[in-house]
Image 1 (cartoon, helix red, strand yellow):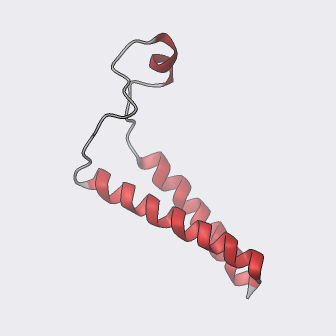
Image 2 (cartoon, helix red, strand yellow):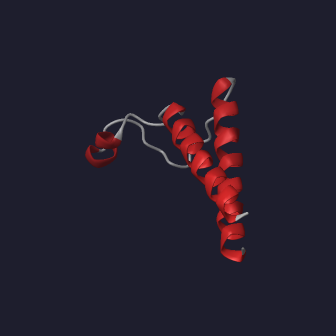
Length: 76
């Protein structure tokens, strides 16, 4: 049972990495945060539409599933 959960956890880790890399950036980049250029507002409401919303929801779902699997592996 533990081996199956470990394999699922590794596959889920790869899926989460791919989903995070597919997400579009929400700002001008890391340099804008340090230089102050651009409009970097972390609390701005930005609506996600279409594929961005699907990828964001899938990432959230996979993250919750990952967290649950880690806890399940500690119990087993």
